[in-house]
Image (cartoon, helix red, strand yellow):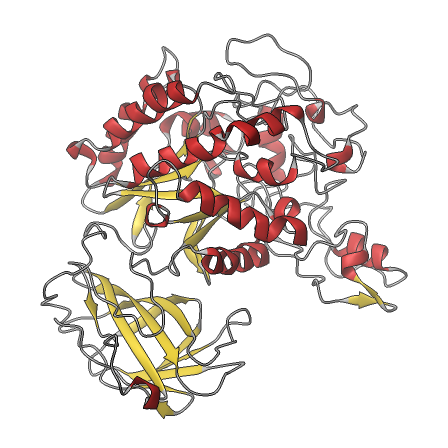
Length: 574
């Protein structure tokens, strides 16, 4: 995803940082109204054999419900993947057509899309662009791909890249890898990259049985070699953490925001800012399950809890996230991604836009700005299917919409990919930069094995149709703890879909969500009945059975039985 820290809107000049080149509209040009369209083409990151670029098109003519942008290269540039547009290439000619979610282009409106390409020799900027066959205006913003000119956007660190996962290896945590390899059949996935969870203050320096942050970064440097390396960190220790559940309660009390800042975030920032690690691309997942709770589990909601009401009232979730974004975002090689729940949490109309507003508030708190947010991550530590192929939200059965089925329950989305792409659009409209990208955690949402449907369900009713065809086999979409029948999902990969920077395994497969029974511990973790397989549920899961596996250990601890099940039910299969 393209991430210039200046907004790419109609009639605003677009400029390049030190690593890029831009062609842009000049603001205040009196002739702009007579120009049918304008184009800004920005080479954002370039290396010996390839580059990433962003194209922003502004429509100055009649409103459109679909669009097609075309150009031709003078050299041997070849586009290898793209986002926010359906991009095809024939010889030197390139065509970019809208996706289903961004076809609307009003008068004065802009749309941005990006791509990665290979080349050799020179990388000249295309001279002519058309929008629906009409030639657009393209004015030089200074510089060429090999001579960037003078950067005029000092807020954009030159070391930041468009998509940190593009062209990079991702760190394999040796601790998780060893546990996975020790399992029967585990060597099939033990070399996959997973997130490193900084879930308490002690995790920063490590313990006698676990590596600290510096040890992980040093190991990442050793893995890196001469290429690029991404390190994935989960920053997870807010005061009053996980206010709607008990399995992953944290060590800090609701009012200990100063301790969070000085003893947790500040030491992490100091380590990440060490010049020794400047060559690493450090991806941070910021405080899962925090901000979404302020939307769905407070006030008059039937799912409200006193703990979440407290955190909303004292503002320490918003303050803590803002502080983390500010401190970590100031480090040139750190890429912040805020947790955005999942479609079965925020996909309803009364949650969707309000959640984006809460995220925007946090992104502007404690000195942070939206420029400290590189993107968002969905489905972290959850099980929602990536793509339901046997039904869509627009289907109906005997005149009854899929939205009215008990499973969908009036949600606007049926899977994570459609939710992530739509929520990205909502976030941009709320005030986040147009280049933000999404991550989707696919570590446990494969839902393969013998229970995986091979086609749509029977059309007897809307419920038989949905239940018979859905890949996600949970009893209820609100079930989240050690779910029975789950499988590994898509393997980690960069730029797999429009608007998506990567599929990731941020939650390491095989690490428990919470204990099945109460277990005494010194980690601040409680016992949540949603992890008890005998529990008959609550308002958040429609008073259904929990669907949890038995004999589970504390959250974050190794759960061999779950790991074996995830491999058995993997989709794509191992």
